Length: 370
Image 1 (cartoon, rainbow, N blue to C red):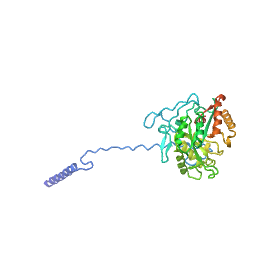
Image 2: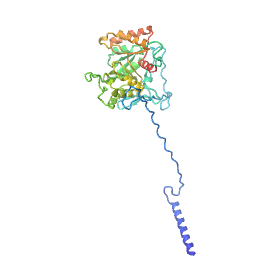
Image 3: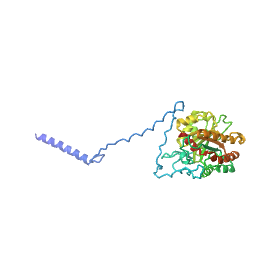
Image 4: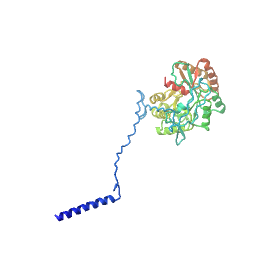
């Protein structure tokens, strides 16, 4: 019995020694209270909304479809600061008005090529911010007075006298610049200071390229989409403050859905419009734009397509007739002395004819809402 008591005492002493050693030994949790936390994993990111398929009859390349519309905020930037309000449309379309200065906050993406336009975090688009305000931008194509819009191309190539004459045209006349030339931003700023909204003119592959060559960085059907995208972004980075893009040539490029669709997709994603100058009868642009939800239109009249400025008056009369028939009509012309002279005389007579001259952006947006 005595031996059993002794053995039991030894076991108890051993256990006490072990517990004491554990209590005094440092280590993870040694001698300290242990708290167990339940960790809830973060929720998975919300998937992007599915992109609707193109309407029947429109065959776009894989991966392209109607782009989701940007969600418009309440006019605040990402840092919470209130954005400057856009100018209200003037009572008269030709009234003097100060356009929003470019580049506007939140509408610029810095790239290896230079500043690129983009949609702001609050949903503002360059198209909306840089456009000349118009009372007719939200009107449908029916009702109200006939409306005409005119784009003057080639500002960067015109001489100083012609440029000055163009800038003296009524402010609703829109102008375009290509990506080539010196002091482009200065020319764009001067045009916008005179109240004219600006478009970027990009070179597209003509039918007989390279016999006819629009210039460096021309978008080509023989290039893969990623290479054309690099060229497009280089072109887009040459200046800021434009509402959209128009074409320089493109008889071959615009007929290739595979080549043209990624370009129009990028233009839509950056919050811009596209005006087809009407020189490519078989252009796929209209079908692609319809599938993407892009603000797009084709100019119905080329005012000075004949050499020497012949029949300009006749073409301007056609533009008026188209506006009376359809509600809105768009024409394009070159920045040439004779053209500018005849356009100036024509514009002075429009009010007496009950026709309103509006910016290109207003004509395109009104057609989209009709």
